[in-house]
Length: 368
Image (cartoon, rainbow, N blue to C red):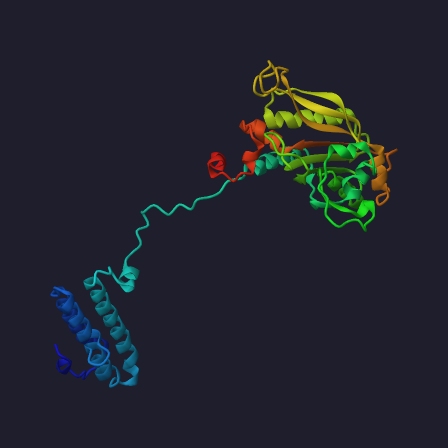
């Protein structure tokens, strides 16, 4: 069919339009089926889609422009459909596969398996930290948070580490530069424990208080298999009337059994921390040998895991400067603290603390 052979439309009702465009579509499909080479494909393109003498351009000029106003929409829809068919035939002839219109017309096979989106997993430190928090949340503890960059007052002085106290030497501190003009208590440092949040909480909340404080801490330590200059702690604070050492021991015994199993036993040994008096180190029966003695527990059957004690009245005195309810004559409390990495290493059998921070996907994928 040449351009001159395109008949003029004399009727513009839907039946007449369907018949006219069906004849053109059949002509296009028959021509496309007979293509047998690059030259024939190019000739097909020019014949149907040529900008100056293409058949579709002639259809537009003859039929669309001469159609009455109320028929232009019906004619335009059919013209666009015919053009999409011709372009699809051309794409197939060129080896480009079905056109976008043809793909859109295909039904979606809902029986095909979906695309699985890979999900991440908690880092072992985060996982262990959250597990510890859940244990104490079940006991009614809330979560306290605070800044990692602290003042000397909250990190040391309010925790009963006065300036020059030898206990400060046990926590090699990373300090912020250019603090010489500040007073000692206002100088900034990277917190060495999460204990400052205990004081910040007591200053804003009267007793009773029951909080656990997870977070990152920093110390100027040489990294080795079991030590890191950056690590995580979970500390706890319980303050109320008539809180006793027995409450502390029972709380920690329950927590250790919840973390390591009901067969774990706990025992306490005297220790020293400036912010608690009396203070104790907590040991648990070795989870690897059941207390019989092995290389991991140095044949003792026990593993030291955390520190604890009754809150020193001097700490309450600092809190009482802003909250009078913390009168050490009327209230008491206990505090404890544990390293998250140490517990994670025990639970998952990890021997090098540096593996937590190396970013080795082979290691991290073990926890997916």
